[in-house]
Length: 451
Image 1 (cartoon, rainbow, N blue to C red):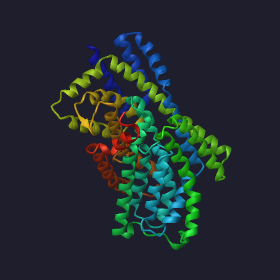
Image 2 (image 1 turned 120 degrees about the horizontal axis):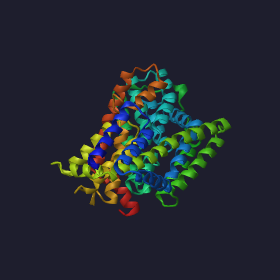
Image 3 (image 1 turned 30 degrees about the vertical axis):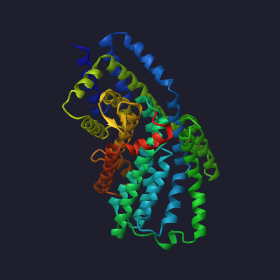
Image 4 (image 1 turned 180 degrees about the vertical axis):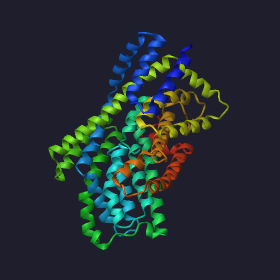
């Protein structure tokens, strides 16, 4: 049996194991060892050590547990609740005020955590009872909560982008800069859609009763300063220091974690129980991401050494389709993979398989060859937007089940109906980034000069 064909069996075995339900990280390691030993003997064990040590030397990955801790610390301290209550009080007189409050809260909080499950769950706990009390439309409410919660996967400093940068070999800072405009465009699309819908049909989201909103300009200003400004300052200071080149992502993540702790103390929410819970959650999430990174790195090296990656690249490049059509095909595959798989598995396993194809495409985007550093930044931004879209795609959309868990009175059909509306907006956002690459590359060219 040729090594290339053995690699195809290895890929088939992985997909089978994933769909059967085996733990992905252990499946990756076991398959890599077994098929690597069959393919090239004892060298597979040396390869495992080399790949593991090499990945753990990647300093940027140290930002993962720090950013994750920051998000969980803010979640445990109730800072997301504080932020939502502030928007709710200030915007209460507007039609669809709770929708707007959820989306603004999710947009701000997306810069603090890239953990979709946590964002959707917390927003569901906060907003769903208020929406039911105010007789908001269930489908629209579900769509707003799930779409807003998924913004954290894209808006920097996103954990996904921290991980994706080293995998593709591009600067994490440049990815952060590139994702800012697409992230804000998606947030703007969501806001514009909900505001227009509520203006046309006020029954979808009526204004809050007068007693639940602030009317005094002084009270509104005080609530804004106390409830919104401190959190925004910490988050945007961390992001700004990265973009300005004053700190690396790891250093900024460390300072942001300290800022989250200080805010928790400032709001008098700090307890040892909350600190312990945040640390344990961060440990569990970070361990999952980094262990999966090691396992997929070993798997990928075995897969490449067998020659199957080159075979797949040559086969795809030989297809009689244009380079842009090839990009669309790859986006469709990633979209489908996003149904059963979490984003770390896609980033660590499948993006490296697709990467050689992208690097060999004869396609120019915004004046750069797609295989160049800036071209790969555009591709990474596409992947991030695409994975966000996949979280909203029935029938497997994970965001629906996160929300159903905290809002059991909402029928799953209604949740799906609401999510579909925002998935269409997501697809529009993906198309904008796909066909107008400058959306993702304008800011990087401005800040880093296209390097």
